[in-house]
Amino acid sequence: MTPFGRQPVTAGLLATHALAERPAPQTALDKWALLRDLTTARAAFGVSDRDLGVLSALLSFHPRKDLSDDGGLIVFPSNASLSDRAHGMAESTLRRHLAALVRAGLILRRDSPNGKRYARRGPSGLQRAFGFDLRPLLMRGAEIAEAATEARQRELELRLSRETVVLHLRDTAKLIAWGRNEVQANWDELSDLLALMQRHLRRKLQADELSVLAQKARTLLARAKDLVAVETPEMIANDGQNERHQQNSKPDSSESESCQDNQKAAAPALPLSVVLKATPEICDFAPEEIRNWTDLVRAADFIRPMLGITLEAWHQAASVMGRETAAVVLACILQRARAISNPGGYLRALTGKAAEGGFSAGPMVMALIRAEGRPS
Image (cartoon, rainbow, N blue to C red; front, side, top):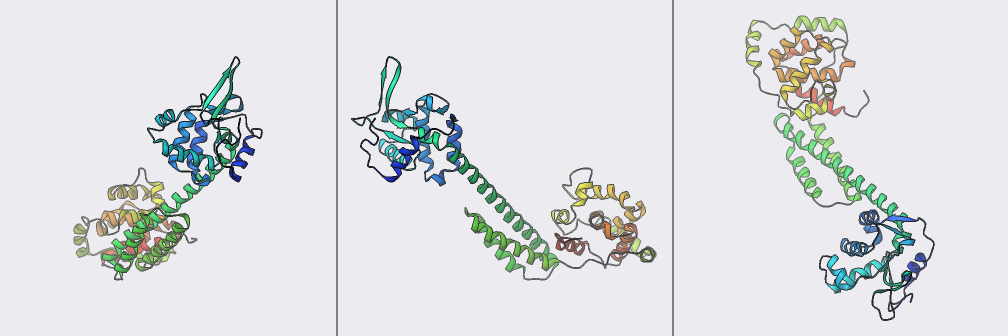
């Protein structure tokens, strides 16, 4: 066979020919699995999706599923046949993509004396074929598989980075929405920065661009947390204080009358997702997944005995604060259970403050979010 035929000799062509003449490192290779790997790693080999479409058509002319040295790796379709299997691609376009595959060192041309593709057969079968040699694919199978693994890892890292940015921006948006109604601050500035980052995220960003955006999103989320974070009331740590709180938390008759109205209070201004982010432990103890405020109240009622809180204290808190807010408080107490020696006394103390109009669950939740990631 003529080694180069009508092709101009290049260093790359010489290297591909030298590679194709070496012994194969593996006996057989699934051609379609190889094509999938090559599709994933196509950027590393400098080929496009349309180049690979032509390669897929070439592989379809190879009669076996596997590429192997004993299987005859030269295919010799006519331009018309190749065009049909390439979904009607024009011959001029076919030639351009075939040339790209040759330049990439994925196939070789084995030209006949007259430049046509054909096979010469003898009594013992196929003696010589002129066309496209697929042996470079067999020789580079391990290289292609390794490049595909690296490409998939990079893609996974990109997805994880993008997810991180999305989560930071989502949490920031929820904190801004809550903070506008609860805290006096320059929320418009944060909202504008958030919108700008969300627009950037619509683009297809590279790893370094995503890394920069992730850092900006973390910084923005930290600013939002700082604006809404308020210190929680001191956690009660000794029984003497607990006893005094129990004595002082009994409302008088006028407070009891107002409790009837508070019992029907609306759900807290805090989004439920923010509450669950601050108090993840209640999700572990909840008998069912918490999807709404009713589920949270049911979960709080379930964990109440575990915390040593009496039914009377729970009902009193629900009457004064409203059932949803009382459930939020129980979730916060559970989250800080190690720091509270008497959860029942602590709940009674907070109920007393709520009866006097001096307590809101929002600061408790925000303080827990602020402490997220810090050692307890």
